[in-house]
Image (tube, rainbow, N blue to C red; front, side):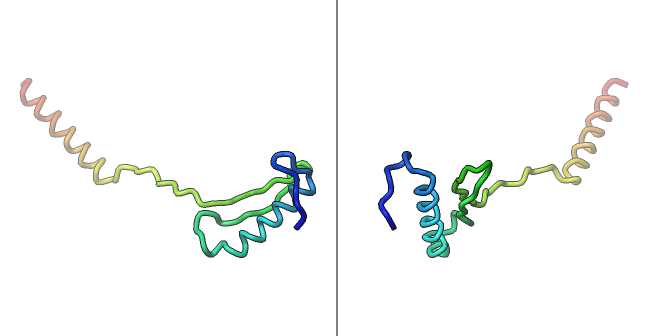
Length: 88
């Protein structure tokens, strides 16, 4: 591998070469880590970029169960009955 200019002054060929070398290094050692899924050299609008993919651990939103809702409705009806019996 040839010596490259200092970041961020890499030319496009130097950037591609560096990303390709990094991609190969990742492929050799990816089993030793769990943070990244893949490292890819990609291109969009004729601009090369390095794409690193990793899992996001997002907790699902909790929703109240039907039983909890039934309990709340039942409690509200009991409270309403108590209020009515007091006012009668």
